[in-house]
Image 1 (cartoon, helix red, strand yellow):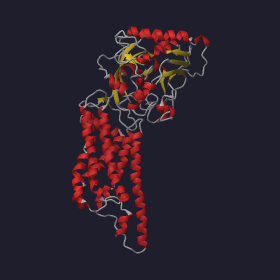
Image 2 (cartoon, one colour):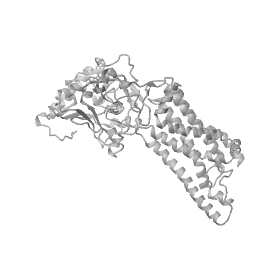
Image 3 (tube, one colour):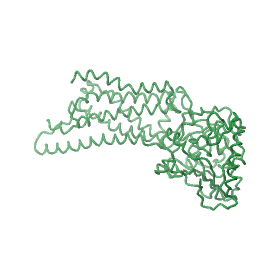
Image 4 (spheres, one colour):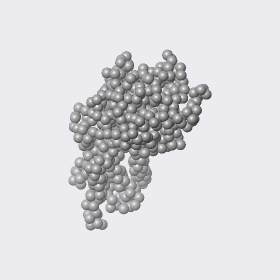
Amino acid sequence: MILQINNLRPKVIAVCLIPLLWLLIDIAFDNLGANPVQALHIRLGDWSLRFLCLTLAVTPIQIVTKWRGLADYRQLLGLYAFFYGTLHVLAYLLIDHGLIWHMISIDIIESPYIWLGLLAYIIVLLLALTSSKWAKKLMGKNWKRLHRLIYIAAIAAVMHYFWQLKGNLAEPFFYSIIAFFLLGFRILVWVKNRQVNKIKTVSGQRTITLADEQSEMPETVHNSTKH
Amino acid sequence: MIIKSKKEIPASEITDPLIFKERRNIIKAMLATMAAGAVGISPALADDNNSAWANLPKGDFSADLLTPTPAESVKNYTNYYEFALNKKDSAKLAQNLRTDPWSVEISGEVENPGNYYLEDILRQQTLQEHVYRFRCVEGWSMVVPWVGFSLGHLLKTVKPLSTARFVKFTSVYQPEIMPRQRNNAMLEWPYVEGLRIDEAMHPLAILAVGMYGDILPKQNGAPLRLVVPWKYGFKSIKAIVKIELLRKPPLTSWSQFAPSEYGFYSNVNPAVAHPRWSQRSERQLGSSFFTPRRKTELFNGYGEQVASLYSDMNLRHFF
């Protein structure tokens, strides 16, 4: 299994770069329409959000399918959310605003939708910086606390998408449904876990710590019963 | 096409179908002679190669310094929520709009209310080319050479009464062709916009029938649209079928949908942010990846002409 995954990894890394390649081709062939800068923002933002959703989907898929191999890719997917998010931010600063900082600062101050995007990006940035195994060991319990912020990032990113639009809400609506399911799933698991834990405490068993080196996301019933 | 009207149109004002057909021929002939390539075209069938109004005189406020945005960008980047909530689909679906024949009901506080055929209106008006900036509330802008005539001149022909304080414009209602009207999406349909009478009478305010020397593409508001260049783009209502002069301000579509976000005036103003985004700058269509956003100007750069209309008003309050 490990061998297989190791072989697969470079492929996954390459596949995740396809959206960028596709975007570069569209830029080169002037395929981005009448407002290419806006199209660029949406493309990069979209891919960042998609990778964020994929990162969040790892645990639910794992629980439903009981296949743990996917967990090895969670960090990679998260880093790609960060990668496309960074390009999204750079396009805003460099291309849209030409690094004219006084215009950028007033634009940010006056645009609540950007506050949400900024919040999502700062969270993803922090998660990316602390994504290594080394940081995880170093931070102990706090690592998990920090990485739970991914939920806030997802909600903020979807809101960021909604709030910049005058009319067409179909696409952000699609993402909000996905985010709703991904987050809803975790709330369900959390509630179930709590019930299981309560039963255990009552019956005199030692309460388990919820942290488990393997799972970064809320503990599954399966995990807690192991202890 | 039957134009719904609350007021009955006197028999004397109803156009005999025969005369109407003749009128259509007249307008076709007019367009044909104006066409640069001397190719006869009908308004509904105009295409890029035949330009109907190639060498029109420029309007008084057409700034020579402005470089028009490439026509293709203007044609492919337009909101038309009656058709679709995104720009790409609306440009495509708008091609289904029926624009021929077209008449405009002018009613309310006027001496000569009536249902006027577009050809009749055009014969009375002088067409000019008006190169205007166009700033969308979404934060993008373009420069469009409109072909049109003064709204004030049209209103004068129907003789507004002294009680007329506001002008209400209504867009076409064709739910069988317009999918978003059919399923009542987003706004209340038909689309409604409005101006104060002094704004409507201002020489900058025009009704456009063309752009880039040619007939208006359907997605850009054919066959007749308003252009008020100092206001955000959504004020410049498309496919107008009714113009009413009123005593009270009309409830306009976007204002009804989100009163805190879209006011009645909606003058371009960089100092008044939209509740969700800044209005300080705009992305100009046709500008390259290496051109930063343009700083938005008060009244979209037409302050010299229109600022006096609002001299005693708090623009933050009357946004």
